[in-house]
Image (cartoon, rainbow over all chains, first blue to last red; front, side, top):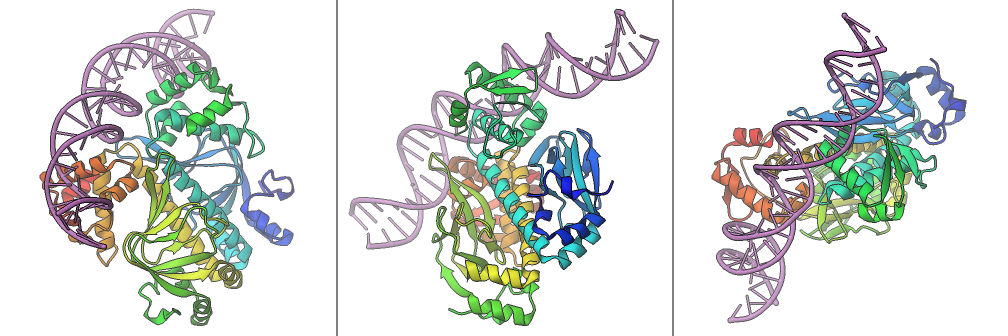
Length: 228
Length: 228
DNA sequence: CGTATGGTTGAGGTAATTCAACCTGTGTGG
DNA sequence: CCACACAGGTTGAATTACCTCAACCATACG
């Protein structure tokens, strides 16, 4: 399916926003949109990386399974995020859709040509890459010596933030887009610990669980305190 | 002190290598070299970020001290590395020299102008940022569910690699550029655990310690096994 | 010589992991 | 329509790797 940038939900925030209308139209000509179902793999580690993409809707994970078969989630990609390593010929990590998602895919060679032709595009990618680098480092800082409960509280707050439409506001009620196992993968701990800490947060009255996936923030202030 | 790119030890690998000779000469005109002693702060978190830099010699850490006063090291910067967030007006993290170091400093505004004028520079920065992002994610993967011994083994191997001059070869004997506390900060554990695990690696015959800082790899193969 | 700073070692406590059982909803095939 | 399997989730008991607290050692330095 060809692109309809005018109606793109992330047209103001994705890297293409740095381009003029004519440049963007030219980029649109080489791209195509595609939908992915929850759980579907976008790129697999070891694949030839012959495309890059912008996420227009949904949520992706960048994952890495170690020797023991445990998956660690190295990062989440939110709408307007960019997927694909520009300078690695093959993918280092798996990229999987956590929810039904929609991507705008660009063939590698033609995208590289576009970068060479439109300096603003390289700059926008640099800006985004810097932001992702910052996020990754924040994640390292978060991993440090914080308790499992604090880490989980941070994650819930981050998910509440991304579930609300405005980035600075928290959704007070939302569905977790991640399974317990995926939450464990993000936070570097076990499924059981996630489950127990979730129970503890509920018992302490900071959240309420509705079903397995629903979360309602009953005391966001104390949740933020707990996150440290 | 003004720049002498011809004799720069990283002239082939730093971002400036992407420029033509004339472009590089122009960049050299706005930059200046400066030395930092071990322990000296390059940027402090919260500072106005009015410069960016290329590391020409030495080793830097990007650090973050949390509420309890514990420092977590978010990344190391090796020679040819780039320092300074292009899109953040103030520094997010501390940058400190771990060994005596030498930087090539560029005033922020003029460097931004150079990026705008030389598209190759933006591209080179994007390449480096992507690489740093990859390293940061590798660090997250490393943090996961590995034992303290495995993490320490990985760190020793990484340091042995960076101590040798060729990047794919291990120095079998070298001095640690980090204190125990800094190693603990990199790996997200305590000083005592670092010390004990180091003792264990020695007892098991994988390394020999000479003084507090000297390391000799007596069985690199098994050290790599231990690193996972 | 006294004081930092960095490093090692020991004893004891604890949070998180491991292993295991069990629950719940969903989909599939007889 | 029921039976069954299966994936995701919860809960319990036992273990353990790491942390905390504390004492002590070595080296450098004014």
